[in-house]
Length: 146
Image (tube, rainbow, N blue to C red; front, side):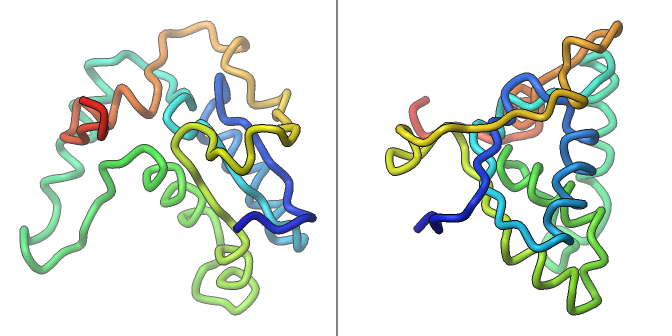
């Protein structure tokens, strides 16, 4: 499943937008990237305002005809990265195919070393933040274990 030359990035404690912008640059340069712990990425801002914004966004579109909006944390992260890629151009489509995003860490990647992105650390935030997993639960995602 995971290719040998893939870069594994642990999203735990990283700001979603900053992490995504760095990953987009690396994808466009030809790297294969695997993101683990997608539900632990941070979104800056107060919890209530972020949840309200997400719920308002989910109301856009027709219920059965789309557009469809992701509720799972891994899909939210993947969609954020897709929004930063030139996805209608061949280089953007190829870059998007080289991206894999997982909730937690899959068993086959447990013993491999994961990198982090220092410039995207949530420790730099001086404001409150919410994790992608918490946001996903607020907008209707239910984890399998619950």
